[in-house]
Image (tube, rainbow, N blue to C red; front, side, top):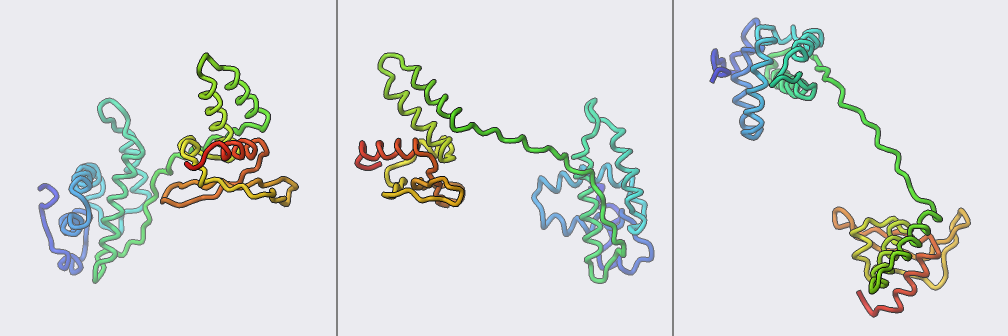
Length: 238
């Protein structure tokens, strides 16, 4: 309700000599409530409790990145429940301010001649960890260790686990993909294909991934080829 005070129609704003941020709040709300969800609208109104005391009396063309920087410093000095204001929160508030200015620029006729591009805090840049892949010999050691752990009656289970591990590491399958490979997904040609780097492709495994898209993954190790060839002899389908 506070944001609706001193309402001026959008078409009337263009005839006013001096337009402040306070002047465009109400007509902007008329537009914004038709564009966003109730939750976003509530969040916008909460943000205005910080934005308007700082920028409300400024003319739109007086809002610059100098005044924005002053706002950032002001908000960083404030606390919420004993904790400093997060930069992400300040960015969200400034994004709403930016939306108001862009709306004013796109009115016909425009009610704002400012071309400011509000500079937000940069998003936190975290480098993705370097992926560590196991070598051929390390995968073999994993297979061997699984084979050693064979309590009574668990031989078949250990063998199945070895097969899954080989599929995951040698063909690059995810765990769920390796668990759902069927005979129909495996293609083993009579002769391997010699690749440019003098290695061999022994066949392909077809898996379904995001978007229900099918991907053919190459079989590049002899041990996986031998494993799949033996498995195909044991099963009729599935």
